[in-house]
Length: 490
Ligand code: BES
Ligand code: MG
Ligand code: ZN
Image (cartoon, rainbow, N blue to C red; front, side, top):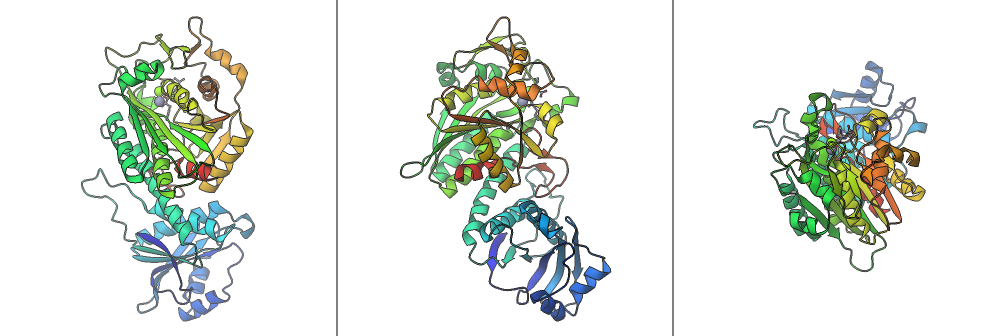
């Protein structure tokens, strides 16, 4: 499928599906619309009246035109009130258009929606929504259940000159789709070894520098926290570090870290069915977003140096599993009493944060499916943002808003660190269940020393969806990639 601009206006365009957006209370057909309606023998007015269409947000209707007319189907989409119009309305509208056009077997589709903010943002947002809503994952079906997507071309009307924005959106989407595919693939497909192979492919294809630290090298660096988690797995852990280096002097230097548990059984504090053990293939979604961002950044080539890091392993059980109560030493020398082997993400992140903290970057952002408590607090559409740095919080907020990936800043209440006090080691890895997303973030903070700005995003909720919503179909959402790319480029 290709998204492109079209020189044709509403009156000139010919093809299978023509989608037109309307604001609530502004349904009169004037100008080009009036002429088009006349040309189509009043079909647009007829369907609006017949269906009592009010253009409320999320509403969509369509009709088949008689044979021989310039378009086969007219799709009329509601945008809500003009004064509430924003990028989110644009996304919702574009995604619903795609769902209808797919069902209606359109091959060629044209989209005419109003401008939001400016031409470039409009073109980027529509293109992203189209590409993400159209995507479906049929890799593991011997015969695809859903009929194949028929859409071949999507023409954006009124956006001539925005080819660069469309291309940017396309590059970002290729990263989102990589993240979706990594997260949706089960733990017998995506392992620490295949993650290192994927990193190798990215490095080759996009000219990134790749460093993969094997078990022995991690040991030499003193990564006892990461290796403690890896102990029970038959698959060797991989510490993956991809670097994008721009030509010339970088405007800034950043590090992105993703939690990379290709499966989280909980370890000896094993998860039960009620804590969704069967979905724990998603526990590498932070790494998935990190790799997705690397794929996009490798194509976009901004003037910013970016490090993409993940300490990848599984959290399993075996005779050599870490025991509840074990004491581990992280690479900054801090000792950790593992009072819960299911709080493993923060152990792997601890060594990844220490590693990133030594790179001399201006800021570090980590993304992790870290706590069930964050899902309880914010639900499935919003990620928790934890940072002591107001400026970074602001940057990420804007990046998330522009991406349609919502963040909500959470408090880093220092007093709660008491919950992690250990009588035998420097700290425990888990505290009381009340406020456990907050104690998790305070734990991570212990591993940052030199870097001026750090933020932790708890993405446990939004990386997966059980129902179709907005640009997401059921399954992995690829959450984080768009916001990371926006942030790097800001
Ligand atoms: N991977 C889980 C968190 C998670 C839960 C992700 C649900 C996605 C969906 C994490 O490793 C975990 O087990 N967290 C524990 C921490 C607790 C033991 C302190 C949790 O949230 O229950
Ligand atoms: Mg766990
Ligand atoms: Zn986990």
